[in-house]
Length: 338
Image (cartoon, rainbow, N blue to C red; front, side):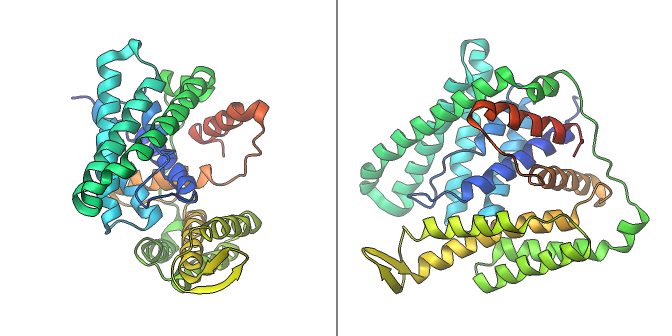
């Protein structure tokens, strides 16, 4: 029996987590509609992982998206689960059946359309009934163009990527996940982080979310972590700003024709706070020596370590070196150079 490469799955899971966080910040016309950023690691993994590893990655992506969006126990999770499983299965079928006859573009389009067909089917059953026919065309059209764009990016990226070639040809320097004496003494920090993580995942109260954010910023400074506050403040501003364009709830005040509503404001603040909170918690608790007992614990440690490294340094993307900058960051994280 072939062994599962848990290190590669951990890396791709962290990448899904990171891209899910980016996607979560983008306003959506429907709560279960997704652009599909987090499908990129799955798309790329088809050339790297075994079938069962890719399917495991699909389920991990579903869970991580639910965690980052706080929808783990809501109807949105059902839509996400159905769409992601359908997408993953169809991408795998397209890749393993057609192999060299299909590009990442074709695979991405297959996955994107399968995702939306599954979600439209559920929307017709649970929400819109026969009226689903009115939302189906724009959703399928949007899905086609977004999956086409993501597939084109994956095709172009993998053709030029040093990281992708290294991933296919050789194994990385693995993260050292062994206990140090300092980490044993401070295992209370892990417990505290787990509580903060749970609050961000299961609670929607703006007060509770920002209490966790402020707490872990304070704890990060105590542990002398390198924390970047300004980018988080900027992130909060932009997420809240764009959330205001989808007004709902009590009207607080108006700017011309734009109504500033309490519901939109709370939603934007909760979204932004949850994203910042996850980053500050991972930066606080994860170090090269942190370790959780058992195989599952070690896997989780590696996922969070990779996630922390992916979010650690800001990338200044420019049009002329867009792919090379991303590729350089992935190489450094993969080879444990950050």
